[in-house]
Image 1 (tube, rainbow, N blue to C red):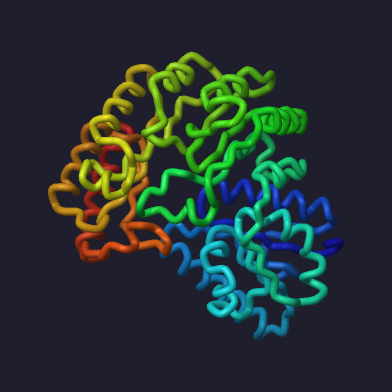
Image 2: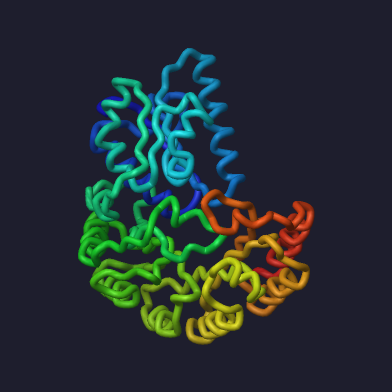
Length: 372
């Protein structure tokens, strides 16, 4: 990779951002130069998200436009599709986008780094999607690159065992794999030595972390590290959240008073179809306990409208939860079927215009109520 210029663009969640940071650091250590514009790059890598179809369409559109411009200018560039879209599309991505040279899933980035020089030299199409790589193998490489000199994302676990019926993540990132606590703590201490003082612990479902420590034990252990001034975590699942977690957040000064707790729907019937494994009554008890224990705490959530069979009554139940809890932030999405997910077997029977209307109602309410 010596003297090669690499452009990396990241889509999606914080996990993807962290993957791109580690990838950038590893490539830089091998002599590559990271650039901010694709035009000057020898290698163009898009690290992608497959949670929503709209995001996929956008990635293929932007990549295709760049590839077309490069061809028009006679530029010979290496194109790579990384992350969850790569895992979903696999070798079909080469047919969808013939200009691609690399397709690499989120668990195979280490293999990509090790083989990138050969790929560039041979220009043979390379597919990396079936690695059994341990979650800590990539991150224990010690590579770290971020323009933020105060804050770092630290992945504590990968994958998900929840299999929410609308979600593609377990099929793309695999089952839950938790890193040993000593590796996480060593990484944080290394970053403190580099001047980092703010940390976010990452996982598809952080509070199901299970290694030699539980998530609550890990949270306290990291909070105790000298030099950790600000500590947060995402994303929590309601079925694993607890009053004990809220008490730790309230008691520890360096733990940020921020909780992202998706409820997705206010209808128990829809929650059951989503395979969320909690009732809306339990969710509201958690939210109210958080408000009471973590004084002045910030609470955000995710909501899906238009899930298959969602009625006006189901939607109204969701709206009532929003009005009752008054989230500081709500990320509201229109349902779209995703490959592999159980819900994709159901008819997407809520009309587009109804989804858009419900989406707008919740968005308008959130805009008017935020901060009140």
